[in-house]
Each structure stands twice: as structure tokens, then as C-alpha cells.
Length: 325
Image (cartoon, rainbow, N blue to C red):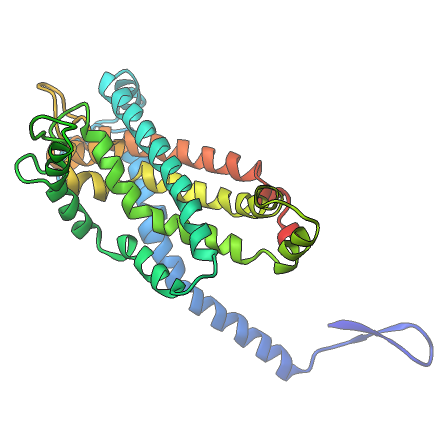
């Protein structure tokens, strides 16, 4: 029911919706619920239930997927993980991998995005070529880089020996000093195109009048880039950083397919290229320590959620959302 002004008395009078209109509104609401129900069930089954189940397991002693006895241990699992040197070593590798990969992907992505946004003959072909590393399946990328890094016939060894930069062929993925760096190279190659198209979306949203005005005012390319281009890039950068940071921390495919977390020290359950996510997989799938794996998963989830929320709430994307529409 709504109110409408009475043109004779000047007062408001109530107007009721016709029964047919009420029925239509009820039908639309009913239809909307049933359309959303599959998505809600999918989110519950894929996200909410596994998270709650993992949280529950972290408080019990679960040594097998088919365990019949699961005694409650409270926070003992958390104390065990937080006091484990292996956890902090894997956390350090995860942090190094994430920061270095994200930084290089950002730098190379900005360069590629600038080239993609430039006007030159054959730009469409360049855009097609750039997207190939990201479009190719991860398992194919991993096979390609394993061949490049191979200790016996790898093209990297052949190139470096021809340039006299190394004397003998090296096992790049078998050396603890170089294995993580090689995995980072493969990940940067894979993800840089995606970052470039993220940033390209920000570049294409810049009004051309701003560049024309800067040209008329005699601004140099650096002044134009710093005063016009960079603010728009920074605006779209925060969502990208959150997405990429989260993706790199949970980057299971590249690590597992390329190095399996190896090399591994004697007596250690985590390899020199294991991130928290791959170590979690080994603890659960290979060793059956589901309670320890659950603790690692919950700790990772909490840290990521807090960092993402704080980062976004303090970004220009959140504070000045209306300013770039």
C-alpha cells in the first residue's frame, strides 16, 4: 500500500495495490528464491560446510579418513602446529613465494598492460599472443618448464653453458638453493598475462580527454603517466593484489606439478619448495594427519581473511569508489 496526494483536499490518501499486482509481487519473490537456491546450496556444499567441518576436525585427534575413535583434544593441535619448526619454515617459504611472485607479476603486468593499451599495427595479434601462457593448461605449462629446467637435456642448461655462465649442467629443481626460484619463474610466466589484463581494464577506463589536455598543457610522458595513468592503475590494483596474493598463497598446482615440493631434507615432512598448501596435502593425503592439516587450513584462512579485509578497507578502491565511476 502506498500514499498519493489528494488533488481536492490536499491531503494524502492510502492506495492499495490491486490483488493481481500483489500476486505478481509474491510470484516474483517466490521465483527469485528458487532461482537462487541452487547457488546457495552450491556455496554451502563447497565453501561453508567444508570450512565448518575443517574447523571441527582441528579440535579432535583424527588420524584417518575412516577413523572410528576421534578423541577431543581442544587446542593441543594448534599448540603442536605453532610450536613446530616445519610450520614456520613452510610459512616463510609461502611468504617469500607469494611476495616475490606477486611483485614480479605486478611489474611485468604493468609493462605488458601499457603495451596492450598502445595503438600500433598488429595490436590484436600481440594481445592474442600475450594471453597464451595463461590460457594454456597448468599441467602443460608445468611439463614445459620441467623440460626447460631438466638436469640432463634442459634448454636452460644448454643456453647457460653456451654463454659460459655455468660449467656443467645443473639440477635446478633438485638444488635447494635454486628450486624455489625456478618455481617462481614458472608461476610468473603463467600469471603475468592475467595481471596485465586486470590492469588493462583500468587503463581503458581513462578518458582520452585527460591525455589530450595533458598534451596541450605540454606535460611530459612521465608527468602524464604519474598524474593520470598511475592513479587509475592504483585504483584497480587493490582488488588485483588481494586476488593474486590469495592465489599465490594457495598455489597448489604449480608447486605440485613442477617440483612435488622437492627436494626434501632427511627426516622432514616438508620439501624445500613446499608451501603451506602442498604441505597440508602431504600431511593429510599421504600421512593421514587430518587434524594437523585442518589446523594449517584454518590458520591460513583466518590470516588471509584478516589481511584481505584490512587491505581493502584501507584502499582507494574502497574510500573513493564513486570517484572513478
